[in-house]
Amino acid sequence: MSRAKVSAFDCEILRSAIQRAIIEGEIPESQSCEYAAQIIREFTGDDQVDPDMLDWIVRKQPRAS
Image (spheres, rainbow, N blue to C red):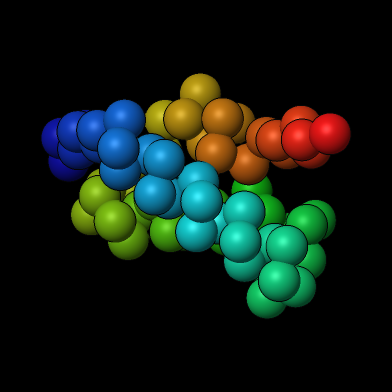
C-alpha cells in the first residue's frame, strides 16, 4: 500500500482530537499511542503509520502559565 499524504493541518486536527480524548478521560494516557495509531490508520487508509508523526501527536504539550 502506498503512503498516504497527511497535511500539517490534518496533523493538527488529529493531535487536537487525540489530546482532547486523553484530557476528557475517554482513553487512558497509557493507551494514547495505540489509540493515535489506530486513528491515523483509519484516517489515511494505510496500515503503516509514520513513527515521527505518531510521536509528535502523542507528545504532551507544555501547559500555558
